[in-house]
Length: 223
Image (cartoon, rainbow, N blue to C red; front, side, top):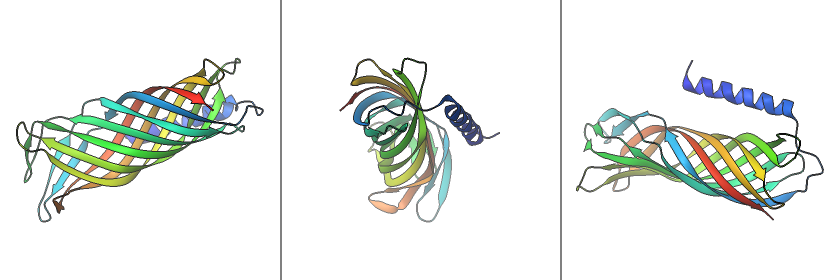
């Protein structure tokens, strides 16, 4: 079974569990909220395809778990749903790689800055009402996604673009006061065939999938 099929199977199990758990109380006040989060992200290995406009070459890109962070502003409806706008920066260090026609590199990084829109369904965990789980899908627009190749003292080579992706979030929030809460979440983001260009010569491109798992912890405030 492929990794993506396994992921979709897990998501289906979670959604089924949410449906059986039951929503939050209907008389819960509707309210805006804002949160900030920080965490770490794992980027799946993927084939890097370089083209100079005539010839192509490939290599396997491997990455280290690295920084992720951002924030969100959302609205909590009294029917159990949240609609949330999110800004997230992700950056992963690239292991040494060699691409024929481009060069041999000691490393680099693959990074993105994305604006997301998420539809999250809340459900109570326990009877106190202070702890809630949530799950739901989202769509992300990458304002910029870029991969940089670095080789010591030589000039860095950077390819960049914009693109879109899908994501699925699963997490929990604990209310430690009437307005303040803490949040922990896992987010899986998927973008296939992202094509990035060399700004000085758009005929030169790098293409790669961008499948990212982010684990984050945050603090939020309702207003």
